[in-house]
Length: 277
Image 1 (cartoon, rainbow, N blue to C red):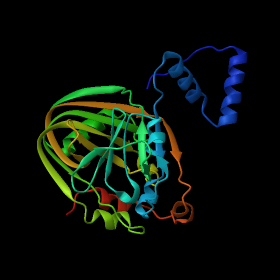
Image 2: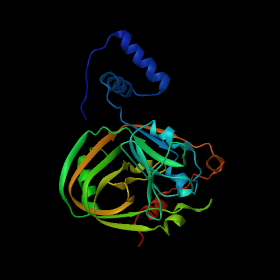
Image 3: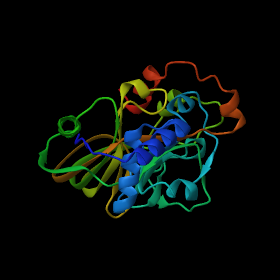
Image 4: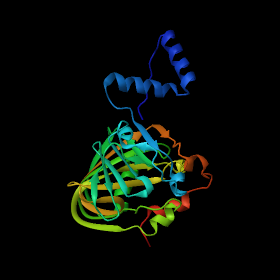
């Protein structure tokens, strides 16, 4: 990561120190935000609603409106109230992939229980001519990442020879994520163009978001999609953004406020997020 060394007046340094003390933000973060504003570029912030632990425990009540979510970015993913399908946010449009395979763009008034979104301005992009499988794609992103301790936002565009996705079905209150995922419908598409969007989350943040890679797919014609379980393709354009600022909006629903969120969600997340054995 490039480093900036410069000389400041005593007055500016005092202001920086005071701002850092009042906000608990590092000086480097304040300077980076100020420069991003000055040059009119996006500061890489990840805005998230609720936590992965709450999802594991079956807390799916709507907490934030889609309209509020879209104020914070144009790329992301999540789910809907009562786990009613998979969310893919592409170019500022929010799509719902339901368990019957249907896809629709949703309006701003819909409430959602969990989502993550960023204003995507990639730092790195490469072209991948051949991608034999999903693990190969993830390995390319491993090479692009320069740290295991910060968040990354991801986008992949191109033609997929195969695409394997899933979409969870709407559940009753109290059904856990693992129980819901046990009956998730899976979809297999061939020769489809589209976009993968999602995030890489550090292992230490497993109680906040799904650790490792988490990607959702939306076809170019917006008729197919879901949570990605596998894929292969050619002529793929990979884009990666370091995401060094995290804002979490915690729900104020009764279920969240009174829920037991002390358990380690790792095992349940791994079981729920992968393909059925």
